[in-house]
Length: 379
Image (cartoon, rainbow, N blue to C red; front, side):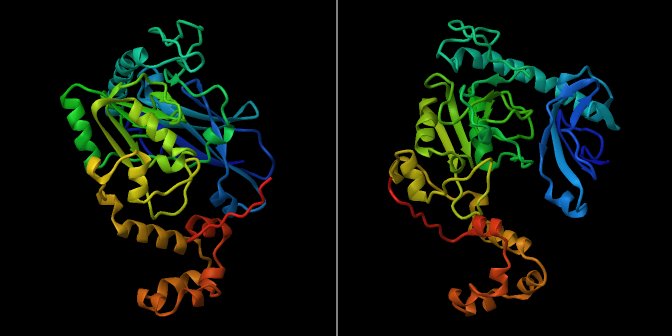
């Protein structure tokens, strides 16, 4: 059995980490488990096509675990074990920096502070009742705090496809436009909601994060279509590249507005020209008029603009990059040698049957399709 740890690749320098690696064996193996300093962590298994390509004929899998240092007693080393079939099959010790321990201590204190602020402002996911200081519904007795201290407000009927982890992690920092809004909220002592936050680089005292997956920086597990907060709870609401991933963006937009205080600021970003991508699914790419209509706004009642990362060069780069990466040789070399002038010199119809088009795999054709059609018979 071959086991490799991709991350951490060196000393842990932050308050949390995404531990990930892969297994390859010529025999089938049970789902791997991760144990760190004697504590068992939820381990996620998913396909690793790159490993399968390197080890054809083997059984392969990727594995991940999201770890907060605050779950351990402060220590300078993490003893990481991978267990399969009840036996240890891998062990590695990873150092932890003094800075990481201090960050972890601060982040756990911030989490507790935010939880105290959140609890009076959310409602029971089952009956709509109020929660006490321990996260228990005072009406039906349902406990909402999970073992990681995350408030679980996901609806009772959960579709596994909605929360299934496939190895992809949405992890970004905030750009200047968002930092401007957050700075204003912090200055006034307010609170902002980052709805569908993904994995953020740090934990902030004035930002409440929701997600459908329990990342180390997640405060509340919730779906956008049914936010658990009381009306008018937040001074600012952020929805950053999220609404394209929800089945009903109009319902989500109403929910975002509902939990925003009168006079509060809503900041939403959606893509228009990007490849199809899933976190976990991808439904809509609105135009500027579509984005305004989503929130029931006219140009006079909302500022709709192109952020720095929304420049057209981003869309062009993203499409070309994925197109190129998907091509096998020799079509990739042919594509690399072409100039833009050469590409545009022929009508698009002339390219459809060429190798640089026909050699593209189906998954990339779907991700970059210029058009889709729907056809069905009404029942």
